[in-house]
Length: 264
Image: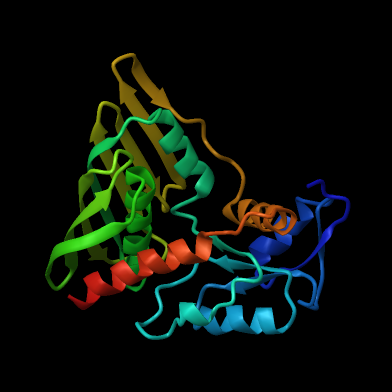
């Protein structure tokens, strides 16, 4: 479906005001959410923010870098799914995930490990995004098998249905550290016929995807588009598409696993 108009956007955050300015053909600033793409900050009770945006007549919603909400806060079965929700997850960008999966060329994962570290306030969201990487690279939903907790760390053993239908063992270890809330590090390793390494180092502003095959090493080109601009573009595309957005469902799957690990 072709686009023949600019979509109104209620930005809510400076990063999205800048994103609108970078998309002058497809987006224009607005103050009323009715008929607009509404940005909902991911701090606080963002679930109520989603419901309020829908009740206000939003055409679509961008949920910006959401935190992990307490168990029982989200009632997904009450979400009617009549408007698209695009979730901005800076540590799990869909374009970077696509780079990692395409470079594997359909080669199934045999083992997946995720190691991550973040300040205590942000470790839950980092664990959730680590689970998102596992799900994306294994090609199936995750099941928590066992976990170990200490005062400052969590370790989880999971299985995932892979591309070929077999269970893929996966491990995640997360450590709470000191420093600013956004000072997180996430490293993903996928073993198989193709070896994949992903590094997301927020303090260094580094996102790197490398693939190792019998033919050599391939490093995906750096992505220079801001996370907010990418999310806004995807929201506009969702308004023009007949395909349902799955971002919210995937976010809640990853968040449920995170809550189960943190509560263990």
